[in-house]
Image: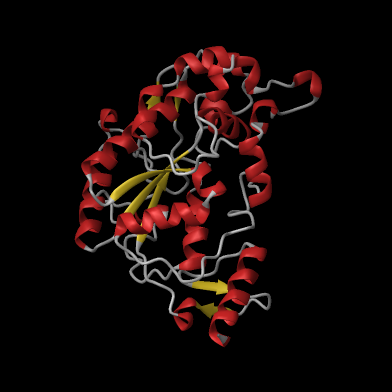
Length: 311
């Protein structure tokens, strides 16, 4: 009983502060590391893939609050580690096989290797309208697709994915045909669905499921991977990252349930350009065929096409 209470206090402190430490370790209020191993947390070696702002950090934060990760050799990936043989797997790596850049082969080879190590892979996806709105605010390596552009321009042009800092100069990233930003979502999600079909240790998960029902989402992923669930589950309440205008759990739930992303915009009121003003063109460009192959965990998640069918 004393151990259980201690674990609850530790995990609660980590969740409230929203600051994960090293893998399998939470930092307490005094910034002192406390290992989950002392509380017999299950071991779960999993790896997260996903486009920018798709919930990859949240997935890791929830995992860190409940599990130990022992083998990090494939999980940690600094940009400088790319050497042509892909010793690491960047979580945002383009998964498209049509790009002829070799990235899909790298991902397939890594997932196959992880299977031999009994590691699992989860690929995060997000409501396309919400996701596109978030990229317009914080485009990461999609500057040429969205930075300082109005939606009517975004929807008329192709764009390039920028090479991340410190990657080799001769590394070329994909070009997405018009409407470029929408095609980024189409290409990534379509490829993740294909990867899940090709590898029995890889699955797709919706960001919204993890936000609204984190315990149920992690249980389904753990069952998929053949891993036990912790006796005490700790949800992650804080912001999962300190960049990209990240939200805490309460704000994220509100945004999902009330579709608050529809009216988000940049600049002053007279310059506002919310995505809601462009839904007809955006909805027509989204590849809705992928929805049938994306698992649905929470009944409270609005349908991904609900913003379009209401038009």
